[in-house]
Length: 244
Image 1 (spheres, rainbow, N blue to C red):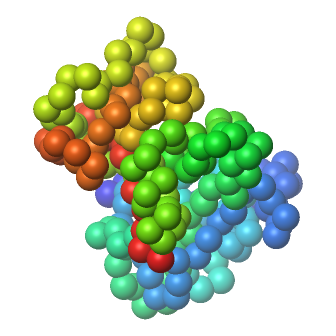
Image 2: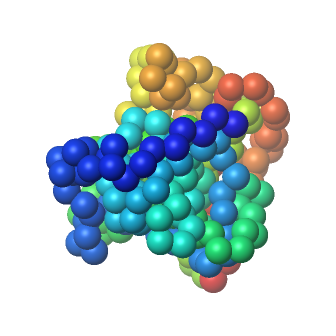
């Protein structure tokens, strides 16, 4: 694990150029709780305040989240959980005195404004990438499957991401051909409602690590005769709803 210790004095000139985030910042940094630490590669160890830690993490191309201890111990990390903190993540560990902070997506827009007649859900952004507030971060779902889930009392539905995972579909008609395979995953998801998709599999990434070569699917391992199958380098999204 590579760690780089940077003193507050060396950071002073950089901090003068950064606007420290405040409570009204668009970026929502949430704390998982006290005495918790996320197990990811540390890209920098800084002796700064927490607000400075936030600013430096946002300015860094390699920092995706951070662990913080006391009043000056900032560990910037190269990975972030893709799921909300209430989901169990095996990399989130008990660590006395530490707190873990991760960027969370902004609230969903009203479905009637962006998806009239459909459901609107967040999709997980890959944890190896910085959270991108410049893309929608949500997609529209047009399927009786999710409608039934919501009517049964399920809440907080989203497109959940699993890494190194593909999907074996029994009915080939459930696969939606992608005529622009080099499109980024978030652009492919814009067609989800018109395709009546419930998931997506991307088998490659571009030079920036963004998933490409994506195929939308009308059924997933949770909704029909389809099975998850491990595939190295593949990213698999599927509709997932938590309990009430």
